[in-house]
Length: 267
Image (cartoon, rainbow, N blue to C red):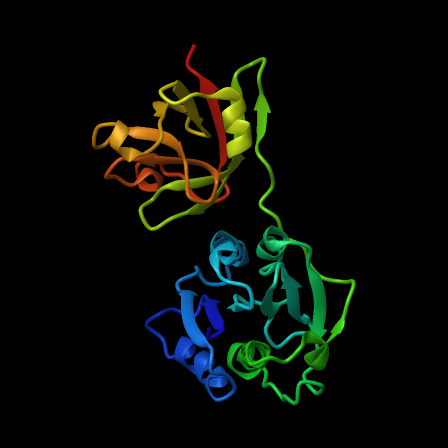
């Protein structure tokens, strides 16, 4: 089976930069290339980290992920290889890789040494000149120790955790991602939801700072509410999501990533 090499960036699908990055890998590996996303909002490391976190577990062992959302390019920030759960992740040391690495298993972190890897990257395009060649060599069978040095220092990033009050009947958390449909992905885990809610239960969602209160139901999926109605459900990432059936919840309720969410049982 051919190895898989994925690419994720904030370069924009309408720019030449994703192709240039893959060109930096193409002559070094026979791996199958898969694009995760090149439409990450510019410099939005947390969004890129979420996208990588959400898909990495579904790739086969031996996959290499090349992820580049890199506001610090050209500075002294480190470049990393992280090995976890039988996969490799390559990218800048700004937290981008860490949520996926932790989700895959127990990370082992290496700092890339460009001279050791036989590379001389420029100042502005490490995606093409550094990360893609290193990722390609890993997918072709190179070991991390051949390209990098073990390190005990790196930048962490996590999405936080939701909270639950059984006594007061509420769930609290944060919107960590707004998807293409305007659905709001939160950091409230399925485990917390299951301790409080059953399908069909009604909720009150208090939207701050406007103080608007939305009534909605917790349901298995969109088809359980009429078009245009809000609902809460467990999404494919395994966390609570809020949405409008056939509508855009982010636009309708003017909610963005980072917003605090508080849901209370409608008693």
